Amino acid sequence: MTAGRIGVFGGAFDPPHNAHVALAAAALAQFELNALLIVPTGQAWHKARTLSAAEHRLAMARLAFESQSRVVVDDRELQRAGPSFTIDTLRALQAEHPQAQLHLLIGADQLADFRQWRSWCEILDIAIVCIADRVQLAGDTGTFDARFDGYAGLRHRFLTLELPLMPVSATRVRELVASGAPEAEIARLVPEAVARYISANRLYCGR
Image 1 (cartoon, one colour):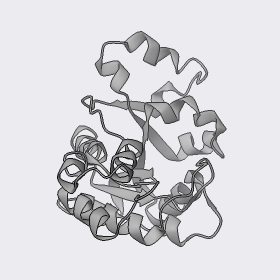
Image 2 (cartoon, one colour):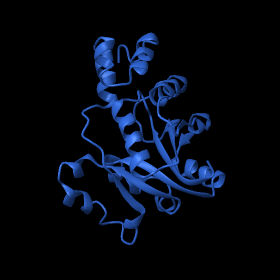
Image 3 (cartoon, rainbow, N blue to C red):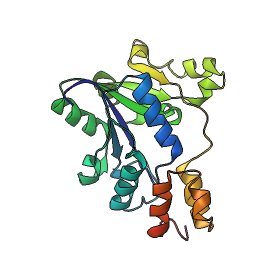
Image 4 (cartoon, rainbow, N blue to C red):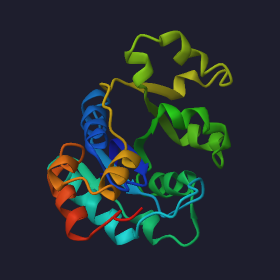
């Protein structure tokens, strides 16, 4: 994994769900990635709530993506002390793979706050930012394009990822588990192995 296109998909993955898996598959195909790194965040600077223990999120990420070829779960942010910043991960990957073009996968909601990210200009120097934008697929392309008004001369550093609408979120999964929903219902929103792991380890109960 020293050349070609390397995707970087970071997130809490608390838990990883079916939309995460679909996004990974779509990115591999649409951007012709040679590899995709799934990077569970360590101490998330932007998260108000406390994340589940790192070992659980790492284990669930491995279960969620184990069937996808060219996907590697990377635990570097979990091993890093202090807050996790995307720029630190991208700098490290650029040093490890100087001949590769990095593609950073983010959601459309993250684009709205992108200028608040540490060293966002350097992020655009290092990586192509690929936005999974479901609004665009609903036909609201004008609204999407307007989000780039503040990036004069940098529009070429962004790509859009075509992703079908999937009404699932990690928040919703946690709420369902906390409400006592059966494992079978949870398994419709997350990979079955992840649903079993959540049940076996009693994650999200009582939240």
